[in-house]
Image 1 (cartoon, rainbow, N blue to C red):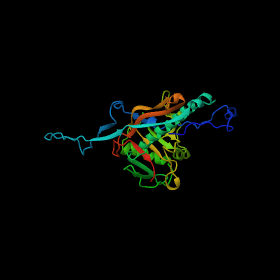
Image 2 (image 1 turned 180 degrees about the horizontal axis):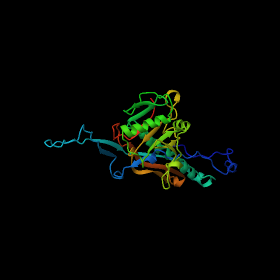
Image 3 (image 1 turned 30 degrees about the vertical axis):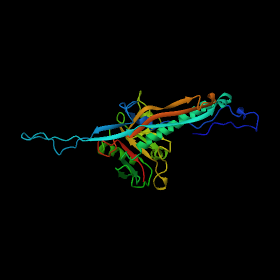
Image 4 (image 1 turned 90 degrees about the vertical axis):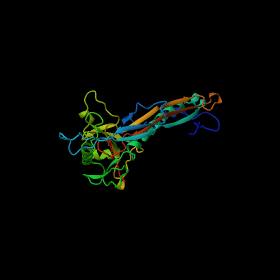
Length: 321
């Protein structure tokens, strides 16, 4: 439980602190979701559906040496194989306690302050939970920049090489070509993929002066992603300023900022109740003298295709050992 809201007195007894020193209560700027907006809700899961869901998919058929038939040979028969991913629901929540006296007498409502603070905390918790999947070991394909023009690939979810440079336009070109030619990752929307980059990683592209401003490629009626800053090589980039979601200090001498580029069906989301605020105006009884506000939800995230296989993988991470 967090600390109970308490008053500070001017003296041992007497009036409360002077509220006229400022007409506005300052608060930390609220953080906004960057990762959650790119997760896809699994409609088959919900209340009274158990604690987990298993996502099942058919693996692509291999390409034969030839599909040409001859008159006296039967049509060859291939076998379907399946892959799966299990996501288990989780509970989330935190709360803030305050007294009815504080609520009655304060110029700045502790209830309003608690609600704003909890909404911000809730957004942070959910975005970090989603980013843990985009950047976790179930996302198998890793790109590690090791020169200004190229890098090293790992396909087991864990980078084994240390990055020596920050991201450049040449790296994005290499990732784009690998996604298109080797992995055949479908576009996230239209004919574009999506990239989430930390501020430092994005700085590498800004210094290369290659970012095409969003107002140059979006048409009337197109959707602008929260935090979107521009496009390179058919990848629409979103800046992530949350260090808990994407690091600004990895690689040799903290040279690299983390990032991730992905296409359709990257990370799934299951939920019974997506996190929301709840109020208890008689918290722990005492005739309503203690109150509390909390956020609570049941939700979980998971990579849809935990593989590096062509036509299955959907995510490329920009990382370092």
